[in-house]
Each structure stands twice: as structure tokens, then as C-alpha cells.
Image (tube, rainbow, N blue to C red; front, side, top):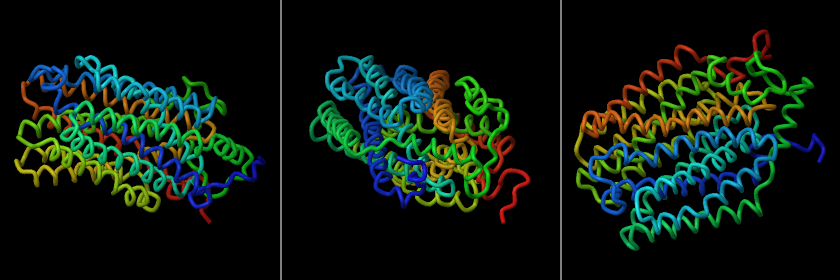
Length: 435
């Protein structure tokens, strides 16, 4: 295929774009099956002692550190062997997860299953996001990431609700096993027959920038990096050498404290308040639905008004929603606070990724996204560990909620201090005219 045959944009690549959205929906379903039933029944079904917050958080700590590392690996690997191969590898690794849940004799098996889930999520979700950015036009990045995260977290929310009902109908283990097996098999089949390799699109875009034939405003790419950077070069650039990338990476890490809290402490807190598994699934599902659905608007919004302020405001709104959870005691109140938390996530989540995509050169964009997602999903592990520690120290699950609220406000302030607008049309490379 000749270079001129690689066209960019959602409309021109609509068929493949739709298949990629289906993939990330399945990724979300796989993650969501672990987020309602298992934490709520950790004590009765899997033998976690009451009040053992650190042990309860162990499977999320394992997930975070493994997924974060695999994001890093996936990004770099995808620039060598291609996006589709990494995606398929992630799905093959997920095959043992449902049987392990079904036959788990102890909580250690759940932790091991979650390690595999972390590998699966690190490889698959990273690739769906990277592949869409390969295909799309720079002016559509916010909308692209919004669609990607909507589809994924819609899947998370649906899985949380469906597995709650399936567990009441079939039993916790049987319901999770059959749900998981159907999801993973569907993903393997559709990846094999309908997913295309998108690495050539990224290479074509890089060639356009190198030849000076790229259209539109030039992004503010970092200048303190070589044309063909090593892994260490990209890692240090994303982590501290570029203050914008540092700001976005730390914000990604801290916002995962919220997701770790919702994953484990939300179901436990609500179960302690007397809610049924189905109602817990709905409260957690509202968070996911609002987060996912709102990204249709918030991702597109950032293509018009920029990335920076939606990220900052989103960090603060999300933190406020977490704190509000503790200030009421009804199903309606918890649903509203979950919706506020989800809307804050919708403001920040796609737009941090879009901001990274704006200023990461296409020649090393896969690595940059992988390293950002490394730091972001490491937040699962660090957040879960800190949540377990502060709650163990105080003996109160509510301490974890306040810890997350404060962390989100501080992290948003760091973005305000160190980041800048990254949208190339709103803040192009210095000296370039927009006319």
C-alpha cells in the first residue's frame, strides 16, 4: 500500500473505528466483571477477614502495578510488532481468568486472576486507544479518546450491573465465569477477523511531519528528545524532563485513586450500609455510565475549548463527588454523588490522554501513551496501597474517601501550575501563523 492511501479521520476510517470501539467495550466488560461482586463478597465467599483493608486491597494493588508495567511494555512493543498482535496477545492471556474465579479456594487465587487481568488490560486497552489515535485527525483527538473511554467504561458499568444480577441468579462464581468466558471468546474471534493493523498510519503521519507536508498548525512537540528516542529517553521525558508531561502523568496517577476507591471501598461501604448486590451494581454503574456517556461531550468539548481547563476542573469536581458520598445515607444521595464523581472523571479522563497525544510526536506516540498509561494505572496500585494503609491506621473506611478527595484537589493544582494548553490550533508552535 502506498503512503498516499493512508487517510486520517473518523469518517474515512469509520468501519475500522467501529471495530476498535467494539474491542474496547469488551475490554471494559472484562474489567467490570471484577468490580462489584468480588469486593462485596470478599469476606463471605473468598475468606477475607472483616476489617482487613490491606488484604482486601491486595488484588487492586497487584492489578495496578501489573497493568501499569504492561502499558509501558505494550506501547513500546506495538512500535515493533504492531498494534493488532499486542491486542491479540492480551486477549489470549485473559482465557484462564474466568475458570480461576470459578474454582478459587482462597483470596490468593483472586489476586492471581487479577494479575492476569492487569496484563490483559495493559495490552488491550492501550492498543485500542493507540490504534484510534493512529487513524484519526489531530482535530478529532479529544472526541476520539472520548468515544474510546465511553465505550470502555460503558462496558465496565454494564458488567458491574449484569454480574450483580447473574450472581444472584446463578451464584457468584458461576455467574462471573460464564460472563467472562463469553466476553473473552468474543474478543478473540473479532480481533482475528476484523481488526486491522494501524501502525502504518502512524508511520505515514511521522513521515509527513518529517517532510514538512503535514497540514494544520504544528503542535508544541518536545524539543529535548532525539528523532528516534530510546525507551529511557521517552520515559524520562514523560516522567520529569518535560513539565507538561510530568503534570499530566501525575494527574493520571492520582485520578486512579478514585477508581481504586470505587472498585473496592464503594462496594464494601455500600454493602455495610445494607444495600443489595444489585443496588450496589446500580450505584457503581451510575458512576460508570455518567463517566462513559459524558465523554461524548467532554472529549468533543476539548477539541473546541482546549484540554487544560477541562482537566483541572474535572480533577476538582471528581474529588468533590468522592467527599459527598459520606455526607448522605440514602440510595438517591449515593447515586447523585456517584454521578458527580463520574462527570468529573469524564472531564479529565479523555482530555489528559488527548493532551499527551497532542504533543507526543507520531514517531514515538505509542511509547508516550504507554508510559503515560504506566504512570496512570500505577495509580491503581499506589492508590489501593495508600487507601488500605490510611484506613487500617484509622480503622475507618471513611478515611480513604477523604484521602482521595484531598489528593485530587492537590493534583489539579499541580496541573494548573506546570501544564499548558496543548491543542495545536489553540496553542500552536511559536512563530507559526494560524492563517
